[in-house]
Length: 405
Image (cartoon, rainbow, N blue to C red; front, side):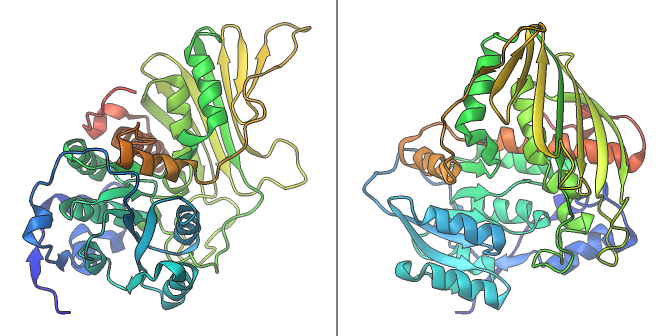
């Protein structure tokens, strides 16, 4: 059907890309290309709805997916295994992805859309998943709030400091569930080990050393190559990928960084794919408000046959160290034996989404709320800006007042 239009006030988007730079990233030209004229939402959906409350466990939660590529379709298939969920709508601009998602959810008989604005006014839609490239998350989240939906937005919530602030301000006042796809927050082994640390068993934390080392870069001809390798869309790999890892560091440290410095660049995969302006290797140093020091690195050229690749989080304290990926405590002393903190915990691939729906249904704890999403994104943005600008960057520069960790 033809949709009446309303003009969104987009004046606050004018600084969206000014921290990333590039002559093709003029803010006003981007705004013109991004079509901030959106389909009108019915007045009833724009009006303030009822305050957040538990929803009957017996009722179906009608769910729509915006973006059903690799990640979106994976999450959708997981959500389909959860009780009381109806996949009512799916949306993607790529016909092959849209058809594959509709086929995968055929028992739910979802309506298909190529325009996400139309999905937001799909009748009786309760929940929206946003699984699109990073530069669209703020616009889509704010519009989904206008439509008064429960929202699951993939990380990162935003790719500039200014847009983190806009989203956080809106999400804090929002009366429905807003959850960010930082699923490491729902790893039971991480929860158990980090709680052990927070209970004081490690003594005072003094340093964290973490990494994310891969043997090869993302496929330059893959389905995400049209946005992943361009920082005005992904925010660079530091923001797109390592927001997960940096958030875990914030979580175990129990604070946010006050300043960051780093070095990095496009070291091996030069101009692959053509026009690429994202890094393939970097190292960062952070200092936290509580005095903890943290070092983090990410590379895409750690040979698979070489030891010490992959991901790890070493948390150093007065009484020893904890490695979070294995859930192991290593006490000080040459004769000391390692102690398993989180043993025999089976990984639940849909734990994060399950907790999201539990939050909607019974008001349970939000697995990763706007505070978690925005602080993680800002930590990553801070590190990226320190590398790009070749200087010490401080948290205060962004003027985003995020609630304490």
